[in-house]
Image (cartoon, rainbow, N blue to C red; front, side):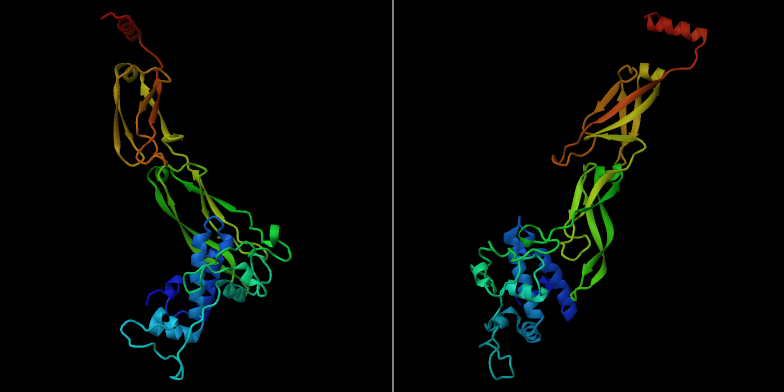
Length: 344
């Protein structure tokens, strides 16, 4: 069949007219070149294909031809294995598909241009010059496409509608999640405009892949997932990583810090600590130096993953607090004086 128009519009083969309109509206708004100034070439290609798919599937005759003969049938080219082009109109004449400009479909569907570039019917050919490729041709130069003849409420420079300010929400993550990564599912509800221009509520599940090593303040942006409002482009929805307090470890940049209390005897004679890491390992840490209050032991590569340096980690820093005995007998005092003075 070649191009799968159903897949392009993200609908199944039994999609109704309402299904097609809803999907086209959402995808055309998402991929319109004016909304993708930093990725214009890809957006133009996708926008054309989306409009092409809608034109075919929203027309009962074209859809019937496409369902039976595929894209080749629409072009008037015989499907593989056939001797000649099939007849599609009760045998009287062959069906000929004359695709329209993607912007014509967009303007016709929305009635008025949501991006504020005014009437387009009288001089479109001067604003869109096809440069070949695909059933609709290319977009070519589009210097004047988004210039408006007037500016209304909510319009920005040149008449383009302003985008609402981003909506930020905290995403609280445990230190374990930020250490090993995790997948979070967030259910959102927002107001959107349906094919008839009415505001309706829509629910959606957003997936956030928390990467190992992400820090507090990291932002994950979902473009245009805020509420839709008249004369205003939907806001971006932004989740901001927040870090839950941990009962054992504290994060310091890419390092992990843990405070450890040890008795005076172990501080002087040595010991081995056992720590459970954030990924559940039992880490044995030998302490061979004499530990004084405030002493810090550094374990290399046992800290947080470093996002921009895959495979590398910060350090684990153990800060010691020496527990001194509250009282000593006279015999203990005498013994300590002999030992510390080098006497046996």
